[in-house]
Image 1 (cartoon, rainbow, N blue to C red):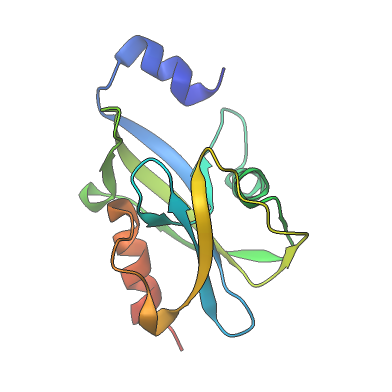
Image 2: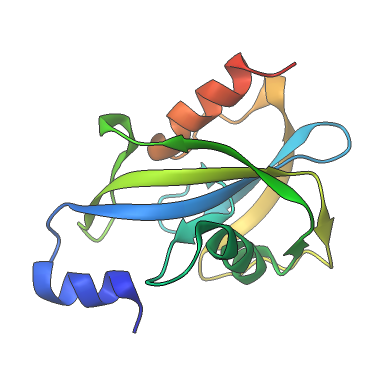
Length: 150
């Protein structure tokens, strides 16, 4: 059983602090890979919760492998995001305040294979044409990306 499921057994849907790791995957045209979530039908990024004892870098790599079936090559720390804007309420009622450690990579290996339980599809979006329905807890990260692009 994973860490978050164990916490939920004791706390129910109450707000918790959740540490997550995610990856901004940019292709050769500087388009951002986004995944369509099956729970909220919004666009998200590869990533998820960090397990007990796991490094954030390993969590980002593991979540990417689980969600899209690909291995990350070189990646670097993009930033750490937290605060009220990263609050998220899941459709089942679980509430979290995210601390998101975000990495960036331009290097993926393997063949794209989406996990159908978590995502219904993917698309590479130009940074000047991102979808409107982005998961609310990602908006501060996306704003930062757009404000700091070269």
